[in-house]
Structure formats: structure tokens, C-alpha cells
Length: 271
Image (tube, rainbow, N blue to C red):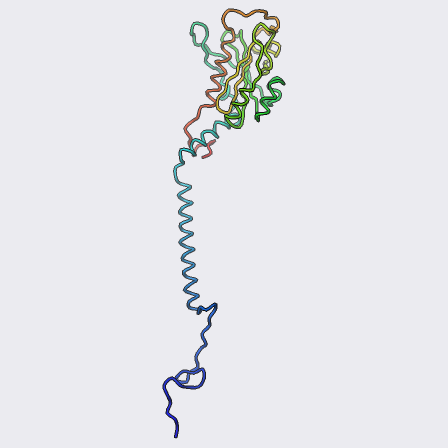
């Protein structure tokens, strides 16, 4: 007699119907189908993460700048004006000043010095303190008053930031005044041939001033257009013939250090 077939029984590796079965493939305990599902999930996670990151970058690039960023941009723009602005903008052809009895007059520019070296723009005794604080340049231009009797050379000393400029300003050595044979150390005089300032040399310097605005120290040195040596002036004259000088220096310092409203889309701004 034959033994009746029992359900689910058969030769090794066969099912109840005798058909061979594929052995299950597993890696690290997971079947192939499970690995496929895991790969799809990981891919979706990366896709979502990438989308969020791209969205964050887009939002960062297109958001309005913060107040702190605008302040930084304004300070950075001011600190670059000494080389970003044309020389004629730093030293306008005419500057208003107040003469005796409150009359408004115009000082006229006779020339702009092309050399901006810190060591050659001022006397040696003044170059030291400026260079110690990181002087970047000394820009100079010369003006005369309306009557062309007084000559003033204005110098803009550029620094990296207002703190360096302030330290340099406080370190400027004292100078001798009118009637004592000249002023020193001071800004170097800048005469221009063929103009009313042609005779204004270092020996003709009779007065000097200093001012500060932002990252700039503004110096002036002044004398008379006839070029008379300061040593020839033995006594002070009535009034202040060189009152024009600090007014010119202050006007230039104010313009250079005035913070403008940042325009992140305009040339010259870095937001």
C-alpha cells in the first residue's frame, strides 16, 4: 500500500505541489524588498532636507538686511571713501567759510597732490604717531581765501576705523604757534606753480589745526601767499588771519565721515 500524501509534504526544497522554491536572500537581516523600501525612505528624507536647505538659502539671500548689517555696511562705505571717491569729491573746487563779521565767502582750490604716502605728507615728527596707528594714506589739497592772501593745505589722513583715528588724533604732538618761528611737526605745505599758492612752502607755515571725523584725521597747515617765512613774523596780529583753516578742515571731515543710508543695490555698497 502507498502512504497517502500529506498536505505540505514533499521532497526537500519543494512545496506541497512539488515545485522548487527560491531561497530568500537576506543582508544584515533584511530582505531585498525591505532594502528597497529603506532606500526609498532615505531618498525622500534627503529630498526633503535638500528642499528645506535650498529654501533657507533663498530666504537668506532675499531677506532685507538687519539694522546691524546696515550699520556695518554704512561704516564700511565711509572707511573706503578715501580711495573710492574721486579726489575732486573729497576736495571740492570751492568750500564755504565764514569771514569777519559773519560774511560768507568761498575758498578756492589751487591743486591736489597726487602723492598719498603717509611718510612724505607730514613732517617726520608727525609721521611716527600716524604710522603707529596704521595710517593708510595722506591726501592733500591746497586752497586760498577769497582775497588770495591766505593759503591753506588740507590733509586727510585715512585709518582702518574710527578707533585708530582717535588714537592717532590724541597722539599728535603739540606745536609752536604764530610768532614763535613756525609750526612743527605739521602737515607738509603743498604749493602749486602758476597759482596763488606757488610760494607757500614749509618754511612759510604759520599755523596748523587738526580735526577728526570717523576713520579720518583732517590736518591743516596755513600761511601767507607771499611766502614770507614764519620766522619773520615776530608778533601776533589782531584777529585770526588763519581762521579759515579749521573751517575748511571741519567741512571736509564732516563730508567724509557722514554716514549715508545704505543702498545694497548701488555700486560701492557691500551689504
